[in-house]
Amino acid sequence: MSPDPCQRKQAGAGLPIALFVITVLALLVVVMAQLQQGTGEAVSLQIQSQRALFAAESGAQVGVREALEGGDCSAVTSPKTFTSAGLASCRAVMTCESVSAELTGNSPAEEIFTLTSTGQCGAGIDRAERVVEVKVR
Image (cartoon, rainbow, N blue to C red; front, top):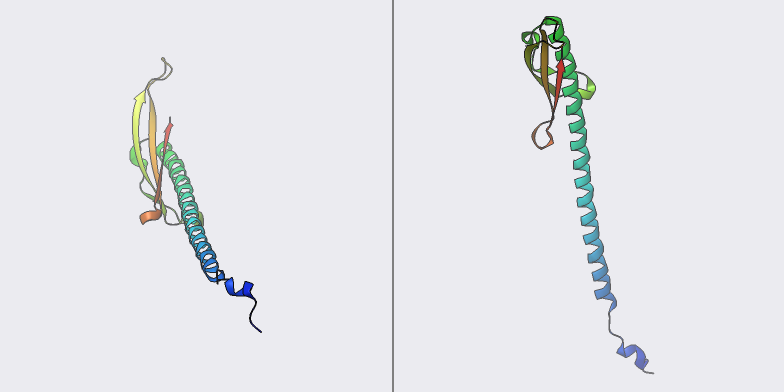
């Protein structure tokens, strides 16, 4: 008995198709892994950026208190380092300028303080920096 003539004409196409499917799936996995890594890095940088903003705002608040209590920009100390868990490894660098101005027309001149607080968090490629400026009298 001889094999069926229909079976003799069939060539092995299953192996090339299987290799093609495996290659396409492998490429898809690699692309998805790269997208996941990029998303993770973006989220990490966003968190560092938010922490830097909070450090700048905290530094500005402390700087305002120091300037108003001391009555002069020389009372503002810089840099300010933070020990709380949320702002660990962050700092705020302060600058202060004061101007005397008569605001209402009849009153004596008042001191107006302009405080600039630069919040910095992280290091290297993960470093984020934000600036907050506050004017107070």
